Length: 382
Image (cartoon, rainbow, N blue to C red; front, side, top):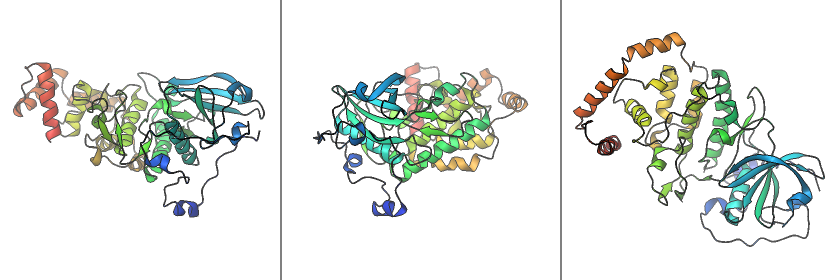
C-alpha cells in the first residue's frame, strides 16, 4: 500500500475553471439534499488507498490498521486512532455506522473534508475511503494534542494572547469555507484540533453538518449554547435556511467561552435569563452590561454586538475579527470593579429592568411563561 499522501492543492486555474467552487466533478454531492441511493463501483484492489468515496471497497479494518484508542464519540459514530500496518503512519479514522448513515451523506462529508483540507487551518483529509460490513470509513490526520475543549480551564478561561492566536486561525478557516459558499454549522471546541502546544497551529474539523449557503435543511438536533437563535426557535423537522451567520454566531459564543471558561447561556432563547439580559443590552434597551460580560473591554463588546445580533442578516463577516486583534480584550481587575460599581447593585438593575419593561406594556408580576412570551414578541418586533 502506498504511503498516505496529502491531497493536491488546486491551482488558480483550477479554481477559475470550477467558478471558484473548489469542487470535484461530482459536485452534485454539495448541491443536493436528496436521499437517493448511489451505487458504488467496487474495484478488485484490496488497498484502502485505492478505495475512494466513488469506488468503495469492502475491507476489514483490522487487516490494514492497528486500532489503538477512541479519540471521540458522538451520535454520528466515532473517531479512532490507528496505525497503518504497511507504512507505520499514525492516522485518525472516522467511522460512521451504516445503520444511521446514508451513503450520500458519507460521500458528502468525505468530499467536503477532502477538498477543504488544503487550507492550513482545516484538518488534513486523505483520499482514503472504504467500507466495512457495518460502517463507512475515511482517513484524517492524527492530532496528538487532542481538541481545544481540554485546553480551556473551566470557570477561568484561556489567556488573552492564546485566545487571539486561535481565533485568528479559526476565522481564516471559516472565511475560506464561506468564500466557497459552505457553512460549517457545528463550531465548538470539540471540533477544533490543537497541533502545537502554543496554539500556533489549530485546525477546524468535522464537516458532517456542513451545507451550502442558502440551502434548506430540517432541524433534527437539539440546541446547544453555540446554536443561533433562529435555529433554537425552530421546532423539530422545521425547515431552516442555512446562512454563514450561524458560523458567525458560534464564533462569538466560542470566543466568550475561551475567555471565561463558561457558557454565556444554555440556549439562545428568550426564556433563558442570561440570553435575555444580553439581548436587552445588545438591542440598546438598557445601558447595564450583564455581569458575566463586564470583564471584556469596550472594543471587544463592540465585536460581540456585531457577531451576536439576533438577526442573522445583520451579523458581521468572520473576517471582522481581524480589526480587533491588536486591541485589549480583557479589562484589568481594577477596571472591572469600577464597571461593576457604575452598574449599581443587582437589586437596582432588576428594578430598572422591571420599570423599563413596564414602560413597554410588560408587567413582570404576571405568570412567568406569559411574561417570557410577551418579552419574546416585543424583542422580535423591534
